[in-house]
Length: 487
Image (cartoon, rainbow, N blue to C red; front, side):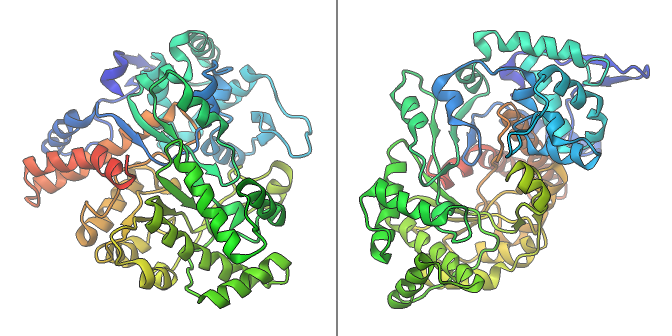
């Protein structure tokens, strides 16, 4: 964060001759001077709080091995799908950014050249969240005081590369310098968690924990689903060809994930449909799924039943349950066939939560031992469905503005749409949901600034006094995430 880095932010001059700060100290605060001063004062009280990062996609191998990051391109560009999307939309092939092909075909491997392509196209990110994140990471993380463009690309590359050769820029050192108190990765149900075990057994005190994501052994449409179920059985010593053995295998794996500290599960389904079949019907459906004798509708019904089963297991073992629906994954078959999943062709779609979650909530929604955090990519559902659901069901919490809406405007709309009905305390603070390690403090800084700007408007309009606003700012930045995820 700003003070922890100990760096001074300088004014630099663009090549057009005009003065501009690489980071405006009042960025994202209201334009009205009174509200801006209030927002700034609130922000100063929370700017340096520790970071709780309860949901993300950083690689645990970074912290287990603590090896130097190879180069600036592999640190900032190749892990970040926000970069892929924008550049591809402007005609830059992903292979030109070093993104590996499924067929092992040729791709650009010269990291300096990849960085140059990014820098000469950096203007495409003007006023986007990525520009905010990257400017913050370069300025506060690496002391860069020039704007990134084609002319400065080589000098900035050399500067960052020199930093990366310093032990102070190894993953564990950066984790500590960023002020991260706890960071959760996202790990498949069949993952051996070797890297997490290495971290646990090390003399480093950084808290990096796994998250149980069972999609590959829950979704009949998953690649190699039958083989995954067999592997699940081999790992747990259970007969996963039977319904009871399959459920017991999940319980065993969930307990295995808790050993190195997991506190949550994560479920990425196309929709949030849930079901509550009786035991006989659920077992019969499972038998059909295992036999491969099911329709598209039955695949959906099995996923729906498994969300309810997972909620029941969360009541048993205390793992917080997260649902991330509403994305049409791998929208372009050509890109998926060439480059694989997670390459930027996932598109939001409309979702009905009120109907979809009803079976699960009828069974478990009043149970205070369940925490069900629901995310959305359909903003229209915040005020219409999610805030009313979270505002009455003890089990339900609204996840923060996610992915496409993890942006200043998206975060502001989120607060405006949810606070009136669900309040602040049926939300769970902020999470960064990132693969790009250096963007973690930047994203949290944006979240804290946006929340302080919103709170300042509440104070200025007489809806919240300054004492309460200060406490809420602290809750949103730190306490709520820590509490919701049992951290």
